[in-house]
Image (cartoon, rainbow, N blue to C red; front, side):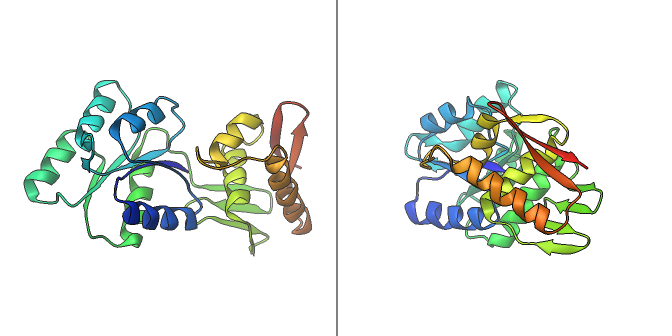
Length: 223
């Protein structure tokens, strides 16, 4: 998933980003409400992790703007403001979940999975085609029941192709899913990820293949 993290504390943001990246997510980090507002206009994020006490205001003001505009992107408020009245207010303002600091990383990841499952855009997180099974919740690819190890970005590419199996996925769509705003993208980087992923699928005897749609993008299809 591609996530928007709105957090102004440097150490907290670094720790959160590390955890989220370890779980194969792409993270766009913003420290200001104004910058987060601009990022949300791109409509590329699967969920938002939102602090409240930000340099330019209360994060709940951004949440209210989102809901008033009809933006239903799942939002977890992650904050030190964790009194009962704070939690009630955040949930009433449209938060899908509200978690106080300090917190357990595993709990945050579980809550993130839960809010995405409840969202209108949620699709089944287990994809099966022939002898291939891809568990998106647990970031696992299995061929004939055997796990195939993928890098984080290979899994991100596979996630998008799987969700649109049988349809051509544009290069730009894949790049949005795989790279954050601050990532430097070399001209052939996406092709390299796809090439390695294609080889791993073939070496494992997978019954799906990735086809190149020249000049447009890629297509995952069962044999």
